[in-house]
Image (cartoon, rainbow, N blue to C red; front, side, top):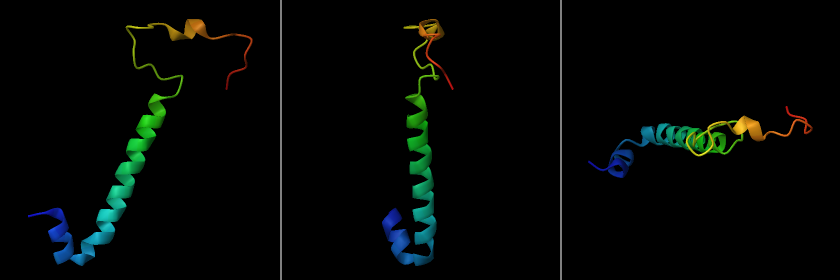
Amino acid sequence: MNVFQLLMKKKELIPLALIMTFAASGASSFAVYSLKKTDVIVDRKGNPEPWDAVDPTVPQK
């Protein structure tokens, strides 16, 4: 059975489907956002020690 057919048959599930879709897209976008931050290391083989390139004169958080 198709998901849309089920939602048309049981209309009380539509708000739940919308909330779950919104939560999943928010979690996915936060995961992608977190990977773009500078303190997250994704490629350890290319640059195993990225903290060596930090400029000590620039204030950090």
